[in-house]
Amino acid sequence: MNRKNFIKKSIIAGLAGTVIPGPLQANTGSKENSTYDKLLDQVGFNHMPNHKEIKTMNTVLHKANTRGSANHGWLEVNHSFSFANYHNPERMNFGVIRVLNDDRIAPSKGFPTHPHDNMEIISIPLEGALKHKDSMGNGAIVQYGDVQVMSAGTGIKHSEFNANADKHVSLLQIWLFPNKKNVEPRYDQISIKEISKLNEFSQVLSPNADDQGVWIHQDAWFHIGDFDTDFCTNYQINKSGNGVYAFVIEGTAEIAGQALEKRDGFGIWNVDDFEIKADKNSRILLMEVPMQIG
Image 1 (tube, rainbow, N blue to C red):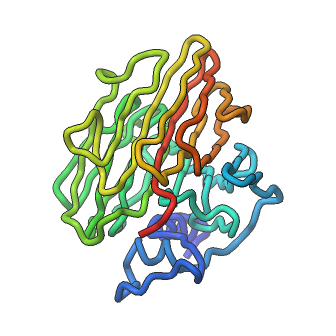
Image 2 (cartoon, one colour):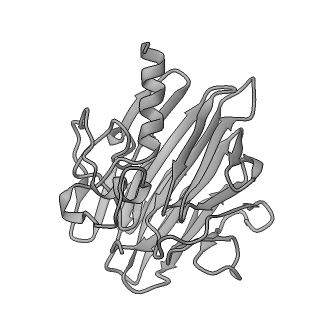
């Protein structure tokens, strides 16, 4: 096998899961092809970054330049949490958030068909368009201004390719452990352009099918805000015991007194609310999630 094929196969294998070590292992039967179980108990390998996370009693700061990163030519990726060939025992998850990948895919390139099960998978394009196909019969173009969700449940297979032949596509892909296992797989996709309002946070995901945005099998709420002027608000936790992981997509901000720059991640928990100051020309994703898995 040549090096190019080896790299591609390694990345695809990583999509099936890099995982949390022993203390969080779950006994759920056969683990040969289970994304859920691999993400819980397979030990990763390769390198660890030189920088450790900055943690207090109820916050954690992940600076952009401390993420795991790789450049495979057709794929440039930064991992906020351990994934594929990047493993750092200090950076395994934030509550039920197991994966936060910041991907940049070359024109016409992408991930061939691969399986998942029992994960809630959210894709948010930041630039360009992504071509999606899956074993449920869905075929779609997901582009900037859209949010896509898949409940892998009992098992799905899908592929993801850059839909354009002349420019890159950039996206965030986020994987959450579900609150229900072995559900019927499902797919949903919305344009958030109609529900988003400039200079405020708009809900784009929740646990409730009747709420604004998409829904998933988890007590999670996502909000996205785009700001062309300085903005200040107070975020209220939706469910007691949840925490919030904020990711600064563009610009700068201050959350609970912590200054943040582009692509920084910041988690906060054991609070009922906290202050957010978004600076001019910034874009911020807030991910409120349970802090306990299972």
